[in-house]
Length: 265
Image 1 (cartoon, rainbow, N blue to C red):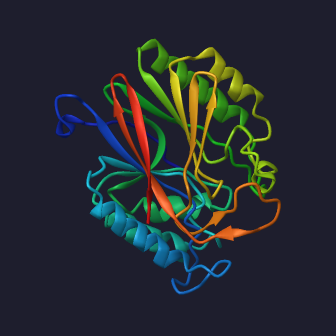
Image 2 (image 1 turned 120 degrees about the vertical axis):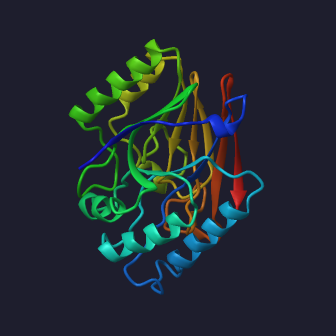
């Protein structure tokens, strides 16, 4: 397994050093590109999302892919993802979700020059730090002691360097008030929330998992949850009720902060 700590050359972003990041999440691809999940052809919807990113007014510098890339954990599903992601022509940093088979994903994506497993992405003013919330066989989120120690160390290093920090993780760490989702959030969230409380330079937490558009303020941080590329869960639902829309998020990071926009596909 290879994790990347990458310093990004942002000279192309202009003198203001602003960085544009696209986020996509929860692709839920299957081995057969024609197969459907809950009545949705997840592959064609990913392809439509990639088209929308390519057609967007502002070209992203990088893309964050925040987990649940596959639904069936097949090598073929990751190969489909690789083909679509490579069309973006920009670096793609991925993290695993609870549906992913990490070994297969690492093997397939390792053959691509543009698709990299994220641990820490370093830019001039912002550091993007991955936190692992996935436990094999569990839909809900849990912290891994060893990884959490690594995460805190990375946060402290970035804090000491005067950086703004964005945490990148799969599960949401605070409730959304949608019961279907909140039974599968990061359950042992106390250590993370204390770390957020103690490190005010953490400005943003970027999540997937929820299949919906949520923005929740927690203390000094904004927690932004991105819609899936396939389908969404109805807000407030306790049952598996879907909504037929999809989207991605675009962030623009500057030395003084960030702004974000939801882009519907």
